[in-house]
Length: 195
Image 1: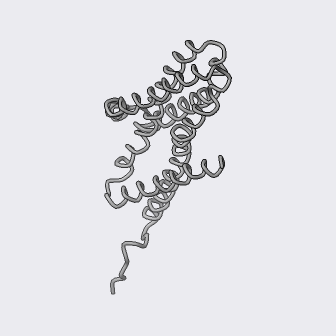
Image 2: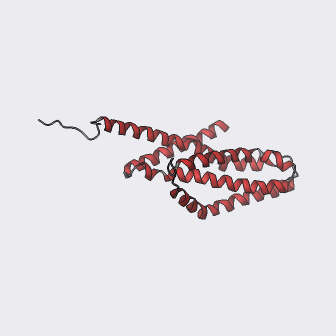
Image 3: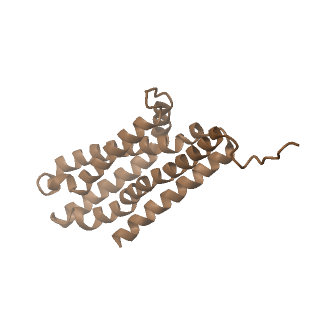
């Protein structure tokens, strides 16, 4: 008599290992977006609050208004430029060939560089705005553009790795949902910490 086995139950040690690896991979992927989304929240929501309320508090009100306009304009231009730049960055990621794979280097490099530059931006370039506003705005524009490029490299490589994780469309949907779930924890978690 033949034993009946369901496909949902692991039957061999190899199947059990694959199921455990899948769970580990899913959890790791979900947690990978926690920090990314907290970063995005700090960059999008709280950055504008910081620029309009405290970054230029030590300088003349008329000059501060002009600088706020320049920074706001910069953010708008960058968001429009991303329409053209992000596909190029995706192409760079797709053509990356290292011993760590296509995505890990950009996760590490993009996350590290953008995090360091975000700290630099939130310090007002270490108070340079109070010393030399022209130099501040030039360095700020350069810093913010580089920050945005490295943030995009991190973000594109994160979401771009889903097809490499599984060939199964259901599994890909699971990774996408878990990434979004982890992202909501990071985004809302930062809001809770700030409030």
